[in-house]
Image (cartoon, rainbow over all chains, first blue to last red; front, top):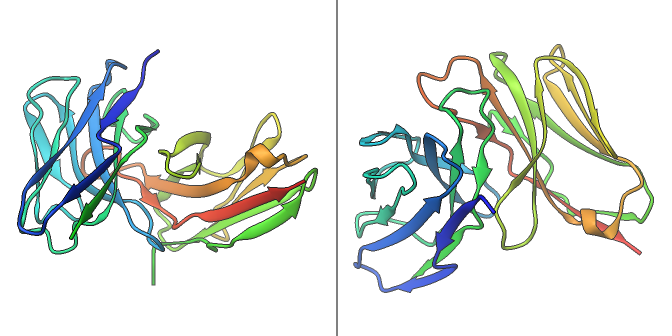
Length: 114
Length: 114
């Protein structure tokens, strides 16, 4: 079955540590996205990539970094510079980067930083 | 004021009821409108997708867009306990400056009771 796999499902880290969240898709989609979901707030875009080896900042990129070395993979690193890293992180993909390409989401990684 | 407003609920209805979920928005440039369903601890899944104004029906689900009022609705007929989830509206203008960058509502939590 095609889909988006995010791992791990739950992640715990100490403050000051960098952590990398994995996102893999086998849908052959060109575009991939990272969103953050917090209670009482809509999903907010962190980074997106429309093509391999290229990515752009979203609305809340500070404290995060990404890479897109392969079409199927788009890992997100939450750095120690991110002031409020505890959140539910969602990876998504779409066939193309245009607005008429609906997003398909993974099942998320819940990150807790203490 | 947020660009997209959505009542967080929770909304509790008896099985078989007609459910009405709504979002209002302020950006008149929004042209693409989506509804996602999100079960607890899962990623959102696309339910309905409409362009510009009008109605769209898919089984028990009907999406309505009223651009003159900047108001969109999702109706669920013959609601089932399996419809219990959080429903997110999302929208986008035609031109985003790159990428499929959606603006999400905060989600309405729906519970359908036996």
